[in-house]
Image (cartoon, rainbow, N blue to C red; front, side, top):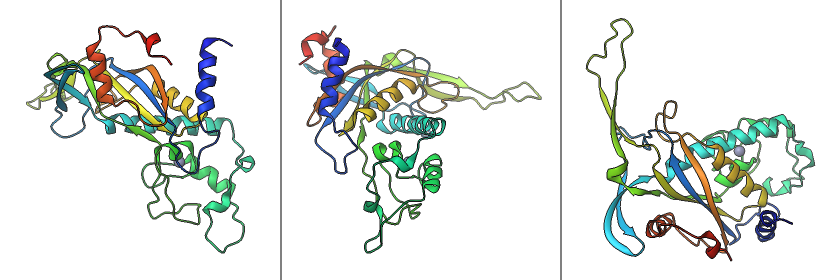
Length: 287
Ligand SMILES: [Zn+2]
């Protein structure tokens, strides 16, 4: 067995084999570097200013440094949408047979009623139509990982129940100081008839290309398949922030995985640790 599959087997042996009904302590943290490859506005609020935070310069240097913050919610929203799109695509193209699933459907039925059998055609369409935030199917991998709250519409299920999320995001702090990353760009709309912009010039504060955001996505008791799906999704997702049609390209690099029985490191600690080191020898951190 080569080294990679040996490590993969080791990780796999620590994870639950099926999606657990209750959360277990097993925690996988995916260490990422999110890097902007275009001008980006990580903020959709009216003022379009960057979110900033004052932090120590590094884990051993208390000098204050202002950093740009890539809010957790601005990471999660596009990734959840991308994840759902991928799931639906494969579910549809491979014509997954739901009747063969090994599921205890009785957990979802009202008490005192007989055996519950879902209408599989209805289940199929509710998975394909699963949508934030009022039409969550509570059956697909997105719902089971990102969580789903029943919003008055029970859908195909008899009982009211929610799914608690098992994927956690936290805000990421730029490696470089704010002063190096902020750039104001003006944009305007040209009127077609006059070819004039009038006076409607708007200014947005952008993050420049090649800004680095060390970031952590945490999975609680994921199965191996869920972990693979999330990693694939992180590599696939490239549009973040406001105005993602024209800018916001951000590439995610996977730097490492931490498997444990609790969260080992926070996003901020990760940034401060990286700020402390000119280079990191990953071999020395391996267990
Ligand atoms: Zn769903």
